[in-house]
Length: 160
Image 1: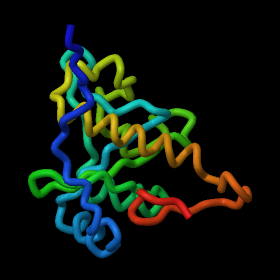
Image 2: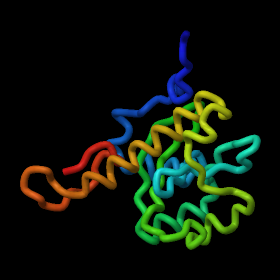
Image 3: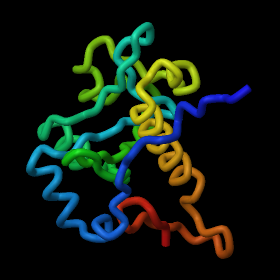
Image 4: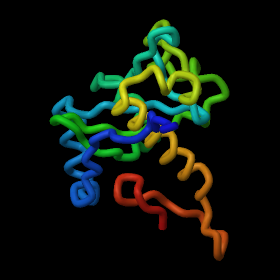
């Protein structure tokens, strides 16, 4: 019996060379080509759990408010002229504390294992990637050798 991996085959260009250029990420924000993939405590933002669709934050106003309040996006890559970045909101006790999320109405943060098989494969792999990258940042805030705080570099793909 063959098992389907619902989180593979995303077709996302991870933009290895471009992620080193902060101006490129800023340009993606300013031109409206950036979609933020919100993650809250390893859960993804989903519209309707019965017929799930991932929700991305794409309003320039939404992004500017979140980024101005100290949230750091982690670049995931791009696909078809659209750039995707994960945004970890786990520091909030309740995701509805984020005013941008409140405005999205019926959306809820759902465990990807619950809705993943119902999503398009590329969407499932994108959400799994965002969730994994946010988890990695949460667990590596300090150096494993000396205990010093680390900081994110290369649009979230390296910690120093």
